[in-house]
Amino acid sequence: MAQWRKETLRVLVDMDMVLCDFEHHLLAEFRSKYPNLPYIPLSKRRGFYAKDQYDKTFGSNSGDKIMKIYRDAGFFTNLPEIPNAVKAVKEMNDMNLVDVYICSSPMFSCNTCLTEKANWIENYLGHRWVEKLILIKDKTLINADVLIDDRPEITGANKAPHWEHVVFTACHNSFSEIGQKRRLSGWTDGSWRELISTFLKQLQINNVES
Ligand SMILES: Cc1cn([C@H]2C[C@H](OP(=O)(O)O)[C@@H](CO)O2)c(=O)[nH]c1=O
Ligand SMILES: [Mg+2]
Image 1: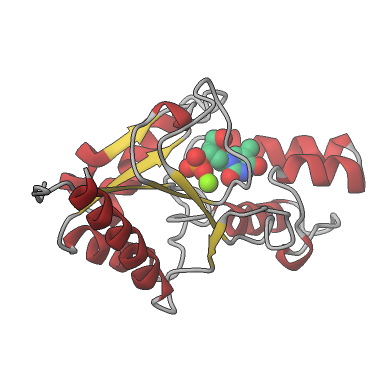
Image 2: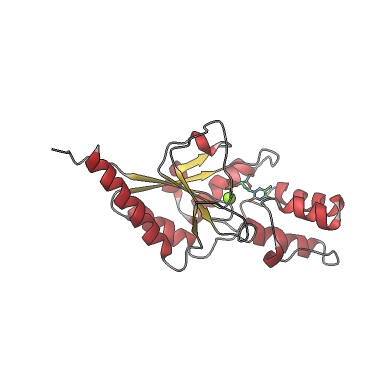
């Protein structure tokens, strides 16, 4: 008879544009530093890198100013929370058979990024969660069941990552082609619960079958 193995569902949750609002803060800083320069409203943001769109739209001088803002010390610590993210992630982690980890790519061109990301987690989620923080450039190397991330394409050394990528909707990707991938539109409408329940059911089926 099939044995019930109490395996947990491991969920990786990205930081920028999933827990913390990189784009909102970037635009606010740009507008406050350069009130007379043209800017791209969030509703018109397309493509993952803000710098690329500023380069193309207003020239590389503008793109360089954008880049300098997110490379400056303090930028990552001061990011505001994506609405309801902290509450949702804590609630998700408290679900039976669910284990949440935070998985974020550091920006090595910003000297303080690593510690600032850890600070953000401590400030918003609490000290215990710093131990659940995975900072890694290549997320394909992490073995988990689900990755919730705003970047539409996640590639790396592992061509067949174990996780299923769920695309978290952000201003830059709302019109992006994501093929067969599922989307999560935010943390406020509670749809993340149904999503996780679907994965949990699949996990339980696999546990029984194996
Ligand atoms: C340059 C750049 C980085 N980032 C984020 C993505 C990575 O964090 P995360 O993996 O938490 O989403 C981090 C390093 O590239 O900065 C953006 O979200 N937009 C950008 O334009
Ligand atoms: Mg991100």
